[in-house]
Each structure stands twice: as structure tokens, then as C-alpha cells.
Length: 139
Ligand code: TYD
Figure (cartoon, helix red, strand yellow):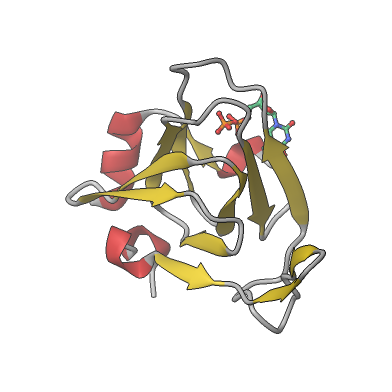
């Protein structure tokens, strides 16, 4: 399947299991077990000033799991035709973002920490940072 054909409906919320007991919870993500790609890179967003948005780009190849490790945020997904807003507010749920979609992250709660598990190493060449260029890619 050509990656530029991916739509917002190819993204899903994954319920990651949690190990729960009286001393707290652990949620585990393991390559080959409960994530559909191998994790090559992990990063996290924190100290986001109130009212700020992040993202505002698409990726040609990169797949991601986005997890509200603490607090909450909204992820706006856009495939050029459809838009979907997903609220993340539980550390045991991941939003799987497939390649070829425009995304914005906003409405971060104060003190939130957003964990991102990525299928590729950082590569600026994998980014589409211009929305018109993104629409051209989706044609
Ligand atoms: P960017 O991906 O544009 O952040 P966001 O989508 O959250 O707004 O990255 C912001 C800056 O950080 C940019 O200069 C590139 C740098 N960066 C890295 O060096 N390595 C990484 O793994 C990531 C995600 C970003």
C-alpha cells in the first residue's frame, strides 16, 4: 500500500495492558509483542508552555505511538480529506499514527509529559513541514 494513501481511519487507539497492584502500575511496550513496528527512538515532550501547539508536519515513512505518560493532550490527525481529534489522557493507551498523515498536538495540560515511540531514527528528510506540499503528496 502506498503510504500517501493512508487516512486518519488507519490510526487507532491501542489499549496497552497494565500490570496493576497496590504499589502502582507498570505499562510495558515490547517490540514484536504489542506494537506494530520496532521502536528505534524514544522521545518525550514536556514543559510545554500553556496554549502552545507542536507537530504541524507529516512524515513520509515514520510511524509513531503517542502516549500521554502524564496529563493530557489532543492530537489532530489530517489526511488532506478527513480530520480527526484524539484526546489522550491515560498512560496505558497509545495512539498509533501511521505514516503520511499531517498531525498537530495541542491542548497540553499543565505539567504533561507526552511519550513518543518512533519507528525510525531522526531524519529531517522524512518530514513534510509545509501543508500545501503535504496536500500535493496526498494527490
Ligand atoms: P519536531 O519534530 O519539529 O517537534 P514537534 O513536532 O514536537 O514540534 O522537532 C523539534 C526540534 O527538535 C527540531 O529542531 C528537530 C529536533 N529533534 C531532534 O533533534 N531529534 C528528534 O528525535 C526530534 C523528535 C526532534
